[in-house]
Length: 134
Image (cartoon, rainbow, N blue to C red):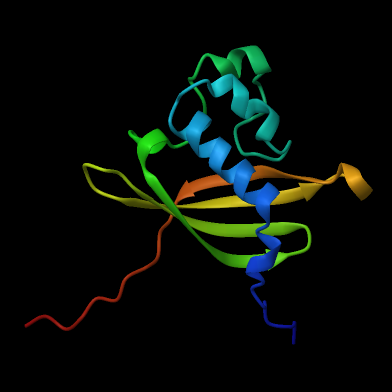
């Protein structure tokens, strides 16, 4: 049987947090979306067909969250390995309803040139339990 995933929140280091935060402040908030291009892993779904210039126009395959730039972001690591992280992100705006997303990060490069890149962003879905009708 495969070993169970042991979540190691220490892998969500300062650099990983900065990449996740910058992605939220740019791509998700739709502010200066061109700056988020450098944060994308080549495997990010929907990235193909875009250049940095077309990405910067803001019509991008990233689920937006109005008010993300001023929302409080809370992170919870749900999967970790030395090369991949999956993190639940709760965005809590000053006004309005909070939302929870999943962000995937992938470590690329070798040696001192390693860096985290975003390879996934989606609203979090967890199947609910439906109780007996009354």
